[in-house]
Structures are given as C-alpha cells and as structure tokens.
Image (cartoon, rainbow, N blue to C red; front, side, top):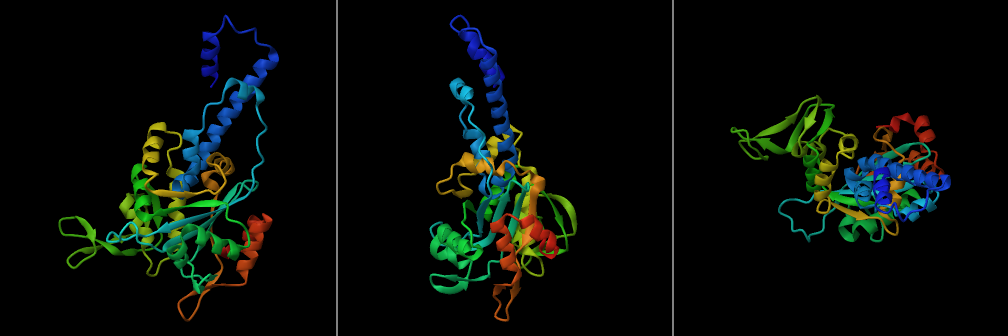
Length: 343
C-alpha cells in the first residue's frame, strides 16, 4: 500500500501541496490498518476454507481504499461472538442434483474473539429434536426445509441466534482438499472402509466382491482428498464426529492463505463446493470476527448426549449448561469444569 501511495503521489507531484506531518501520520495509519485487514483475512481463512470460506473470499474481494478514505481512518469495530452453523451433506452419485438430501454432519462453530477460541460442537445426526412435524431426528430437517429450517431448530435448541454458516457436500470438501494438495491426519485406530476397496490391479473402486477394503492403519500421514473423505465417513466402532472435527482442524492448518497462487486455485472450486448463508451480515464483517482466531484456537467439543434403546440420541442435563455457557460467553470456563467433553 505504501508503494502504491508513493507512485500515486509521484504522478501528481507538481499538483500536490507539501505534505504536513498530520497528513503523513494519517496516511501511515491507514496503511497500517490495511495491512492489519490482510492479516485478519489470512487468519480467518482457515475456518472459511474448511466449510464456509468466508474470509478468504473477503480477502480477495475487499476493495483498495481511496486516499480520502485512508485519511478518515474509521475506528476498528469491536469483535463480537458469532455462532455459525456448518452442515455437511453426503449426496450419493446416483442421486439427482435436485433430489433433497439429509444433513450428514452438523457442527456449531461458536467463535469467541475475546477468548481467542472457536469451539467446534458436533451435533449427532440422530439427535431427537422438536420440529414443525413433531419429534424427529435433526438430520431430517435439512431434507424437509433446507438450511434455514435446520438453523431454526438448532437456534431453539441452543437458545441463541444462528449468525450464519454454510452447507458443503463431501464431494465439494474433497475438491477443496485436492486443491491444497491433501491434509495431514492421524488415525487413532485401525479402520476398515465400508465404502471403498482396491482391486488386484490397485484401482480404488466402490467396495464390491473381489475388491479388498481400504484399511486405514493407526499413525499420522498425508491423506489425499478421496482418502480423507472416506476416512471421516466411516461409522462402525469409531467416533465419526471427532474424525470430522480432526479433518476440519487439519484443513485449518493447511489452507494456503499466504500463497496467492494456491489461494486463487482454491477459490476457483469454492462456488461449486460451498453454499454460504450469511443473512444480513457481510463477508468482511464475518471475516473480521473470525480474524481474531488462529488455527491453534480451534477447540473440539462433544455435545452432552446419550443413546436411547430406540437408537436415537437425546440431550443429557449437561447440555443445558453448555448452551448457557455459550450464551454467557463463558464456554472456556465451562470446558475447564467439564473436560470429559473436550475432543
């Protein structure tokens, strides 16, 4: 920005009056704030590219301020807490694009800039909730009413408004992972794929007779897009929600916000991968809020629930304490007092 200002003034040097100390100070202040916005966009982009890609997009679309705007240098807005709803869907290959699907992954992202934390709270897809149709599993709300209906149910459940969010399907998430060259994941237990296998020739195919199931052995390594998505889709005898949170955290550390070329390639796949729901909020507003959280500030939380004999999931009494802490801005303190729900 400083170089741009120098070049601009140089072209009009004969017309420009001598710069006063006040003018130089105002220009320097504006330039510093412009650099700070870039840092904000970079830090928040880790969350955006995970499921929302809000701030990374804002970073590339924020216009260069005019000189007179720099001189005015408005005050930096105060960061506020945000609650975002992130939904993942698992559309099958044979399904029509217009056919409704259920939400396969539901995550509340509660952003607390004051604490420097963003809490990922996984909501089980089989959680029994009250809907306009009566009692039903929460993942069915997306099938009948889409994002808005799901957000309304979650808002009622938590007792606080949903400020925005995004919907992404696993195919879209795989495209994002491929664009950044894969992600580093740690497998906690031997996991056998129920979806993919490998033929004798080594080709990866949908699991069928004659193909050996893909096996993910314990340990840490680089995952390709198809591997990462297949791994987090597994359900049998594994903590699927925690695996998904691990994937989001891995993406948070891998998004190339400091590499313009890589970021540009990533942004090219986002329109077909992510459906944003921001309501009346602007991209830059949400980017500013997220910008106060670094990748290391991403904290996983398990919603307090229990499994019923009927196979559904219901909240336990600790859940109201968690939601009350969200409303009061004391989620960090609540988690310290209830470490069993950290994930």
